[in-house]
Length: 344
Image 1 (tube, rainbow, N blue to C red):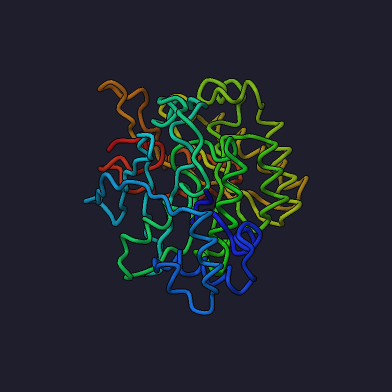
Image 2 (cartoon, rainbow, N blue to C red; image 1 turned 90 degrees about the vertical axis):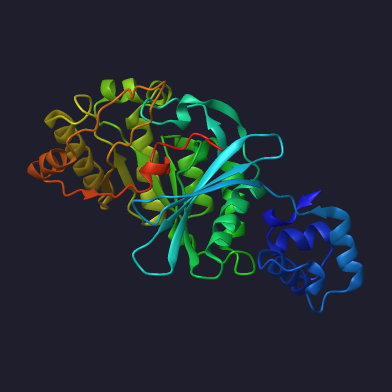
């Protein structure tokens, strides 16, 4: 059965034999919360075929928690097989606009040391409709008071380890008959899977790319991100360069300073040098985002201390690199970067 949230009009047309106009009307009805029977100008035989060949599955809303510190809202959602995934509603600077931070996997296999999701292990990849449905459910919390302007794949899981379904979800969300979200307002964040980076560049070239750096020093990065052993940062940066050349978009590089681990002047110097090399080779300067560490509370004791963010940003500046200090909200309800862990 075809999940109706996961199809574009072209896919529905092919699967059910609808005319292009009929397919657009049915998809539009689905994503506007109306029964498909309300779609005017669609033949009864076409509706019968859609009903026979499709389904409209749902995620269970387990909990909605609102931060007392800022306007971040976290949704705990359960899949049909009992996995709890999380999505976050992020307020944007312009009033009435929000981004949806969505999960691409239940759990994660990459085991990044500073991420709560990475400590869960991987349960499974999410289906295309389960990714799209997170955005629809975030939109539902707005109750018509605002709109989802963008999407960031930075929730639970490594998006590029589920790249087929992530790309399918992006295409649905971009379609004007579905969620009508501009691809330029979407960002796929990765720990560094080169083949997936290249596919994003080829297949959804308007979507932006985010890369978790941790440290530009290989030994430090390997201690924090085990993926460094399989895909060294140099190999990853080669793919990011290809993405930038193909798309013309500046990548976003994120680093989270951890006290005494990767917040040293040596780390700042190495990162600044890597940015310069990238710009010299590609002609595009990466946007460096410094993200404060959010406690992940493992067995009652946090494994890291927050690095001195202001000092690290100043150290980067002393080496010629201006970095953006990113606000990571919702930490009081475990909705901030690195804290998502499928808590119902």
